[in-house]
Image 1: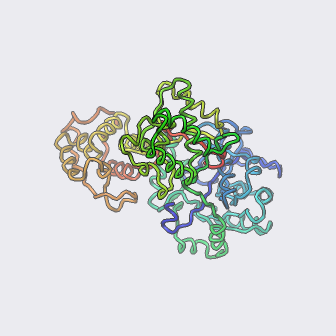
Image 2 (image 1 turned 60 degrees about the vertical axis):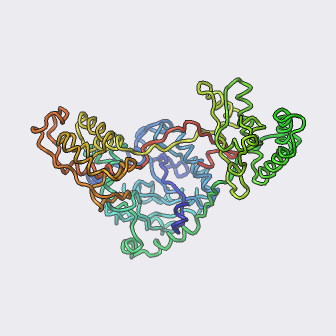
Image 3 (image 1 turned 90 degrees about the vertical axis):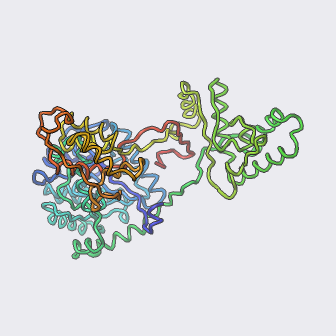
Amino acid sequence: RAAREAGVKPVFGAEVTVEGILPRSGVTLTRESHPHPNPLPKGEGVRSPIPLSPGGRGARGEGQIHFHATLLAENDAGYANLSQLITAARMRCQKGEALATWDDLMQHSAGLIALSGCRQGIVAQHLLAGDKDGALRVAQDLQSCFGKDRFFVELQRQLHPGDERLVQGLLWVAERMDAPVVATNNVHYAERAGHRLHDVLTAIRSHATLDASMMQRRGNSEAYLKSAAQMARLFADRPDALRRTVEIAKRCNVTMRRGVQDLPQFQTGAVSQAEFLHALCKPALTERYGSDPGERVQRMLQHEMAIIGQLSLTNYFLIVWDIMRFARDQGIRCQGRGSAANSLVAYLLGITPIDPLAHDLVFERFLSSERPTTPDIDIDFQADRREEVIQYIYARYGREHAAMACTFVTYRQRSAVRDVAKTLDFPPDLIDALANAADRRGLAEAWGELWGGAEEGKKGKRGKEGRGNDDRAASWSITSNSPSTNHHSPISLPSPQSPASSPHTLPPTPHPPLDRRTWQLLLHLCQEIMGLPRHLGIHNGGFVISRRPLAEIV
């Protein structure tokens, strides 16, 4: 949505890791045949999203090397296939890893455009090992899988040793099999300055310091989103490869309809859903309002039923009612809340306990024909028995059609300090002290507290006053030239006193005192990482129910 609002066409795709077996061509990529999957000098290793070694469930063959392939969704069917492929890849591996198989590619190739991949693509791997014939065979295998018009040989120039030799080898493969070529840049961050944060995130993922993660990090800062002019200079000899990027983008048209309900159909037998819903409300109407409810009640019920039908929400109300019916039948305490209390239908179904007419509540605050969005009905269940409700939903609608919603846990001050400081090899005791101080006062104040004593900490705090307590990220800025997308006013660090002058403020450590430059680097990196996703969590109460298998959607 943001891309479309900015006038940028979104292209949905993924770089997937595939096990190194191509049975159709009889090729198996192993460490014995390719002793180093990335023949670069020490310190110039290319980061892999998935370790190039057997690991996790589903890896086949000792010493087998996995390869990368870039897959783009050409249409909605392609997006569904890509989602299913990624789901299958994740389900066969341990948490945090994903490994697709050749069978996955064959089964889910429809609607997908495939690129041969980066240096860790299987075609490039054969060329880097000097096996041109093998490279041609596996490229033909991929073309056979995806189709002649949906497979492209990928060219990249990122100033790695042997780049030009690899490009010429890829061009030879493309010419021999009459395959189109496309120029890409293996983008891993938006701007060149982002390479530093990318290195830090790689080290964090590797649970290592920056020095120890050297071989997992990228060899240079070329993996940024280059401009059209920069790419034109890089591929001046192959303008056709650049033009093809536009052609491919035009072919990729995934609709991704937002806000469209795709719930499973609640089965009502021989009667329609509207008739079933009305039949549920009718006895409750007499129970709540007596044998003669009155014209006002009847008119409101007819009005709400008409709006619910007009917005195609009858099915939604029945599913909510069904879940609450199960809970009550099992003696599980439950109650709806929020704006649903404005609805007479919700009241009659027992979803909410409040009579909206007695309290003059406005139905349109909950649901309106002028605001065609799915209503928000929040339901609270008895905490110690909520698992029974969850298991009922799985059993009722199927595990492939229901799932707990996730949450994206983002970096905050404490977690940012801890993770970044570890990559910079800060001593553990100092990391603890700094994280605790930063969580209480902000990082700049923590600097003053730890290095300059209480008075310096107060100076840092005074420098922050007037910006509001909810803008704590402002204390992470160092300069307006920071590559971070978070723009805050620059601040100054308090001048550190010597450790000897304030021994009570420093945690005991065998490490030498950290200089100001190291602290500046920590502040910069923490500012850049703030707000980025750290890990996934499970939402406390959000549940997704879908007519289609969720693997086709997410």
